[in-house]
Length: 235
Ligand code: DC
Image (cartoon, rainbow, N blue to C red; front, side):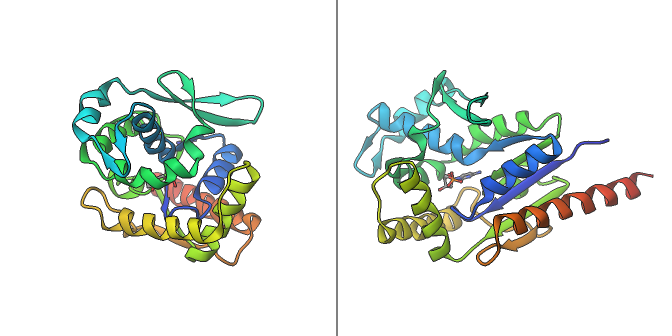
């Protein structure tokens, strides 16, 4: 059967990666978390002293960008892919509040986005991928066969992110996380470079009041319908 590209975009902390990962597993596709790539670049900047407070040394990052390598490798222990930054497993380090607070600065830079988009398009060459992010259906794969745009109320998203942080032993409170979610929404959707916006041909899902099982079912149904339509149009 012909494989397709599935682009899942939407706001931060609305469960995009959970649904993308679950679908990829179910249908035997590769899952790519593009947010992890921007987080890894941010971690690189932190580790290499490119930040002083909220101020980023953009010129130094520009010099380094071609030397920063990001890969994903399957971890048999967790059954998920881990993110590697220049050969080091950084899966845990890229999920901290420190990285979350700085990632919007890094992901708004044109040359960073360009470098990531090139890598993402390369990963999708053979199709058979589920990719989640902010600009997948609009910039990375504007011709993706199935596009989904996911959202949820900010308070619901903040609670989900807080639960995730706490389960990982991070110290955070609801107000701080809600502020981060709202700040990122604003920066992500108003930045000049590839702002977060819904592709015209995307299916929209607000998952504030539905369960993970319901959202997975909805997504699988949409995938199956898309595959059927594709077959009909080919024959
Ligand atoms: O999905 P996430 O929360 O892990 O993403 C981290 C940040 O990266 C988020 O603030 C927006 C940015 N991002 C982006 O600009 N483009 C993407 N394709 C994916 C993420």
